[in-house]
Length: 279
Image (cartoon, rainbow, N blue to C red; front, side, top):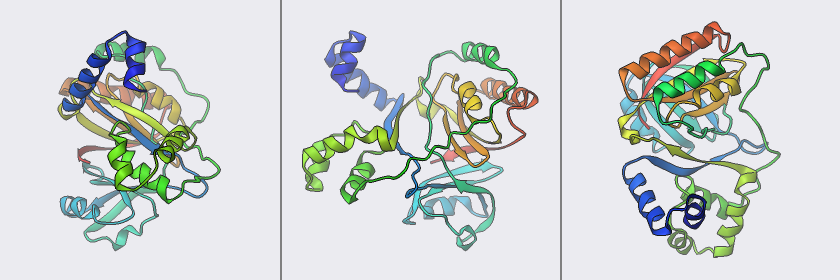
């Protein structure tokens, strides 16, 4: 949404919208809008959750590998999360110990934040909990990704924030504005676009990663999506990765209690846990 559209929708002056957005970026209250490519018959991403002997060194080294599109250093039942555009032979990597799970991932999903207060979100969640029935997954595949080399360049330039200035990028790659305009207009066919929202600034949160073995992925995302900051989800086979954010030890305890309650209700059979340190 353009700043003019935001101003019209909210009744806030255009100059104030610009100033507020700038402040929210500076304070890490918002991230993005980010672009997440949908799986296609000719395009897949692979997620791996691994243990390495020296995760910090591996985390730094993965940056240099051409097929790695995302990595995080964790502490817990796995210490490296790796997303790649090629199925990697992980035992060939130095310091490798074991892979606890690897598979084709769905497009990443970020639900909209609808409440700002932790206790209110917990109340809403309790009202939603029931025994799940219908099996669901986040995995959906489009027939084909038809991007050419120029369109992949645009993706790599804009994937972390579609609000960055377009003209310097187009000038650098000697592209016409019409090329970018057409690509942007067709993004919903090939991608999901989400803005992360962290009311207290993302650096003040703890990122908790949970890998749920479950048949009810959408039900879990609906529940955890009620938390008062943006959560991150994707499916990998029968597993659902949920990155959930908490501010305090009390919130963490509430979250763990909720997870055990959901297990009793049959939302999942088991889960693995790791705290994200850097990504």
